[in-house]
Length: 356
Image (tube, rainbow, N blue to C red; front, top):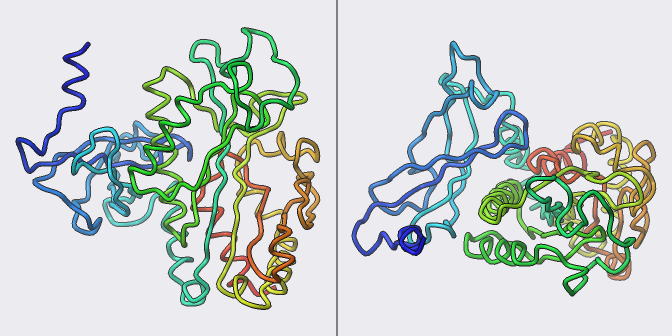
C-alpha cells in the first residue's frame, strides 16, 4: 500500500511536461457527475485552448445507442487537488456532433441569460449554501446514526463539536481545503441541524461562474467521499419525520441592490419572484415537496412569503440589508439537488429581464 500511495502522489513535473486534464460533465439524471482523464502536452490555463472531446452518451442516458456520440466543450478550468502539480479539472458542457446543446445541457441557456447586456450591467452575485448528508455505505443510513435506529433529537448538532454530535468532520475539512486548492471561492462550512448533515458555501461568484464552481465543488465532494467509503446524498429530505431537510439556499444581489436605494430594488425583485413562484418551484429540484412543508425552517411549497430575518419564509432579507438600505436577499426555496445553472440564471432572468 505504501508503494500505491507513493505512485498516487507522484509529482509528474519532475519528469515530464505533460499534464492530466480530468474532464467533468453532468450526466443524464441531471445530478450524476461523470469524468474521464486526458493527457495533454503541457499546462493550459485557458479553456478555449483545450481540445473538445467525446463520450458514449448511450451509457449516461444522454444519447441513443445507434447515435451515441456526445461532444464535451471545455468551459472552466480548476487546479486538481488530487493529482496536484499542473494537472487540472475541466468543467464541460455537452453537445451533439452538429453543435447543438443536448437536452440535459443546462449551462447553455444559463450562459445566454448571463451574457445578456442588461444582466452583465447588473453584475449578479451569488452565494450558494449547499447542504448534503453523509450516509453509511452499506446501509444508506446517516453517518453516526445507530444502525436501524435514531440519535437524540435535533438541537446539539448544528455547528456542534464532539464525537456524539459531529460525524464526518475529516471528510468535510478535506473537502474545504480541496476546494480552496482548486480555486473555488468556497466561503465556509458548518455542521447542520440533522446529525450527519453538513453545509458548504460557494461565493460570492458572478454569473455563470457560480454554477461552474458549485458543480466542481460537488465533484470534489463526490471524489472525497468515494475515498472515505461514505455515500454522499443530495436528497432534499433524506430522513422522514421530525428531521430537517437539505436545501441549497441561494443568496443574490445585483449592482442596483448593492448601491444606495437598493432595498427598494430588492423589494421589487421579490415581488417578481412571488408572481413566478410556481415556475421557480418547478425548476428548484426534485422531491422538494417533501422538504418545503412549512416546518423545519421552510415555507410551505404552495405559498410564497418573504420577511426580514425570517427563516420560515420563501425569501429572507437580512437585518443588515434592512438597516443599510441595500445589500442582498436569500431565496430559501431551492432543494439541495437543484441545478445551479438553472436556479442562478432563472433568478437573474426573473429579476432583471422579465417584465410582468
